[in-house]
Image (cartoon, rainbow, N blue to C red; front, side, top):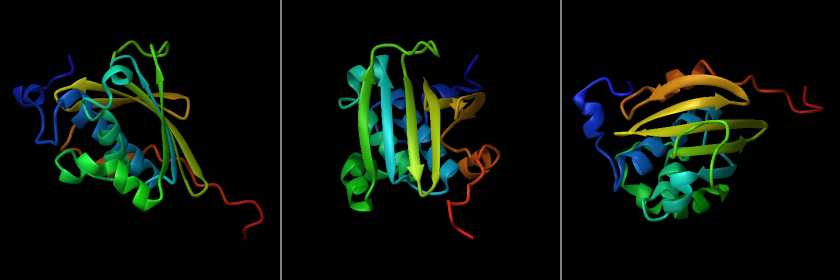
Length: 170
């Protein structure tokens, strides 16, 4: 069972319209923000199934970008996150697919994000009620449950890839 209390079902305080397609997705983006230690310079976002069909109408695109900018689920700037991302210099692109063969759920995204010399690929699923789960980081299966009130920095710290020294740097 994914839900721990009635408050998980009701969902978090958030910018709407959907706890699955907005709040849960903000959490996935914010986890990636913390994993990188900053907002990405580049992001390739693949939406599957339900996300691919309704991403603009439910604000899934804006929610994920808002999370990648480090914002919380209740941040009113989420409504304009695409414009904020451009101002911040984030180069992002959305791609769409019908089904994800790696994970069976309608609310799936894979994000490849780059900041400086660090690149991460993260698979996430929004479970409903503002809950989400990270199920893959850089090809490794993980099971990280997220909700709006979590300390994303502490969660991500455990999974942060080691930064590689740039070629020729001393």
